[in-house]
Structure formats: structure tokens, C-alpha cells
Image (cartoon, rainbow, N blue to C red; front, top):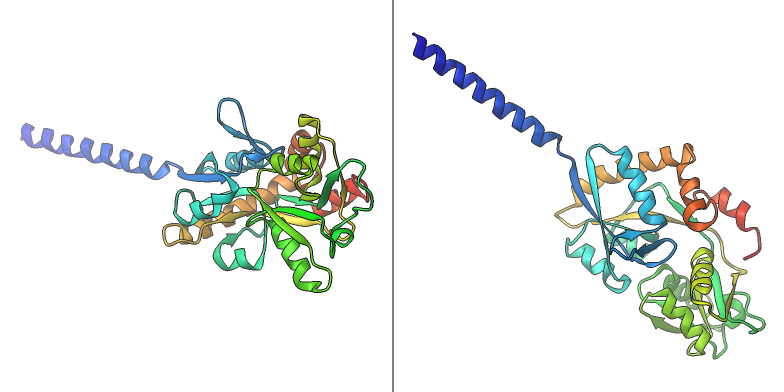
Length: 283
């Protein structure tokens, strides 16, 4: 009888241990690998220790703090290969100032809530006269540099499609804005497109003889988290995107995104209204 009681007690204890282990396993947060370019300061860059940083990463960390069911890991990936890596399941999310385009929306899932708003600037050598936007260089021999696969490439190609008699002379860069602005300074190209915080940061850090203005035809553009739609992640990313959107709304409402913008970008870029209020018509 005593032996049966001991056996039953042991079985009960073992069952409890297994149940606790199973519960603990269920409670483990889902790991999510997030890619960012890491070469687009102050939005994203890599610290000396190799860790990604910048506005994009600070926002992602703030989102992660609100999502108990997820744990984010961040890796830097060159822009020229960032979408190929997403399609190869090396990571499942891109947080790197991605704007929506028809081509991207056919292949990837975007969140519904923008986490920043950008306003397009055009950069050129100091002293160059008359460059105010795409219209001022269209139909000329002036070279405009854009990154392959970027939203700026889409802007330039859309211009050419809509203005057959005033084409832009497009050349391509590898997505490294520092190199693109250096090309402008050295006269290898005449202009390039960038966001004001990015242009201001690179020009200041590198001491470039380059200036920029907001493009006269530019309108505020929202940027979003972008998710893989491969078989490995499509279903999981639907739930993840919804959770991130909810977290972003919270961070916008409580002022956290505005504060992150002030820290990394020098101003609030969290909403369209904030962007318009900050930039007006100047640099």
C-alpha cells in the first residue's frame, strides 16, 4: 500500500513538473529578427560595438517594451540586399524607413500605422544655383543619384513616367547616403535625394561642402514597418503587425515617439501634423 502511495505521489509530482515546464515554455516570448540598414544615420546606424542604433531601433525597442509576447533582435543589413534577405527568411521584419510603393505592397505586408513621416530634400554642391526640386533638373544633363530599390528611386521613376518631355538623368548608388553625398561634393553627380535629418547629419559629421533644400514638389510621406509574406512568416506576421500597430498608436498618443524624434532627429517626426509644423518651407 505504501509503495502504491509513493508511486502515485511520484507520478503526481512528475506531472506537476512537466506541466510547469510546459507552461514556462508557452510563456517564452516569440523571437523576432528585425533588419535595418545601419547606414542611414540618424534613422539607423551601427555603434562601435556593432549594435544597431538610431531612431528606427529606438522606436522598435519602445514597441518591444510594450509587447510581452515578443522579443526583438536587431541586425544591420546593406540596403542593396535587405529585401532579398527578407525573402530568404533570414529575418522577418524590416524597420528602415520603408515607404509604401505599389511594387512593395504586392510582395510584402506593411503595418497600418506610420512610425515616422519624411519630407523629401534634394542635396547639391554649395554654390549651385537654381536647384529647387526635380522640376529644376528635369530635361537637363544634371545627374540625379538615387539608391536601387529605394523610395527615392520610385519618386524619380514616377516623375519620368509622368513627364515624358522632361526626364530626369538618373544614376544609381548603393544606398549609402554618406557616399551619395560625397559623390555630390566631388562632382560625380549633381544632386541626390535624402531626408532633411539625414542630409543634415552627414553634412555636419563629414564637413561636406553640400547644401540641401526641401523639394518644391515634395509632400509628406509616411514610413512603416515592413513584414515578410513568405510561407514561413506570413501567418505569424499578421498577428505581429496588428500588435505592433497597437503599440505604435500608444507610443504616439503618450508622446514617446515625439520624444524619440527629438533625441535622434532633432524634432518631432511622428505625425504628419508634427512634420508640417516643424519644417514649414525651410531646411
